[in-house]
Length: 382
Image (cartoon, rainbow, N blue to C red; front, side):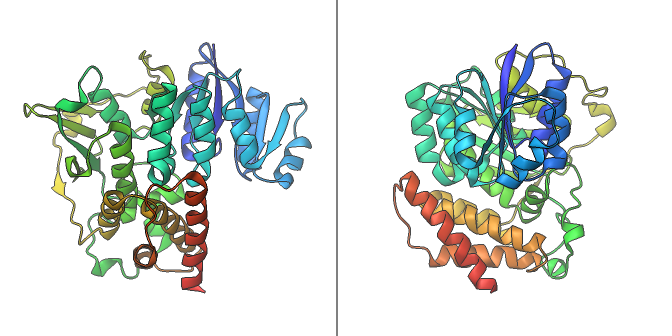
């Protein structure tokens, strides 16, 4: 029985992780959970699994939990609480499904405690990949990716030598507006943007998919996870989301990982690695039903956020932290109906253009750049 600490329990990945735990109760138990303010979503999880530790974002959420449960867990608050449960000696697996750069410090604590880490918090590697991967190497910890694309690459590389890789090919569904021109994006609504054709995801990731920033962040994440130069990472439009990513080797052989668009599959793979367990879905991949797979080039002109991510990654230093913070703040403003869809990329580009890059930033510098960038983006709108 493996004890799991779940960071970001009420988000899309967190809830699907709960599904995987429910299907494998003989293998996993929920030791600790962390979430923000969504007590309504968290309470059923807490009442069913009765984790020993609960971490919430603020005292109000703590009080709501205390008045709603009949047992007596330890309830902690904020980043310090997340760091404590991420490194607790009784937990064997840490699932980091926290949204945004807030998950960075907890990831570092889990690495230093030599935990098995199932990793869905791409912003941590985007903002501080040089720090996180150095710590992972020093502590002998492998970050097991939960993103379907990086899980696919991980599976394609099992037993292979990274120096034999010619390129990594990330596939992209294209998001909610993949068939629209830039002219047709001028007046799109929030409701339209949240209507993803293939995947069921949280609001922020769905918007990132529509701008293609999500794929840009994945490019940076792949660079750090697999130690591959940006020049050897390509992105390909693949509307069916059947091939989740591919690896081309120097002998021109290509390995691809195929599967249904169900995030519970890569979550289970990360939790059970290096084993593979039976998956409980009634229906697997049926290529006869699908019939055809389609691929197309992704244009930087059509998807400027993808180009911004490549630019930030190649420049390095503090610029990826600016990219991430500006994007998070701009997407938040769009979700609040304070800016238009196309203004998201305008605000990100402006923040990047105005930033003076700091090379090899330490953790405190990254956190300061993150805070400053968020205030800067807000000031553009105000």
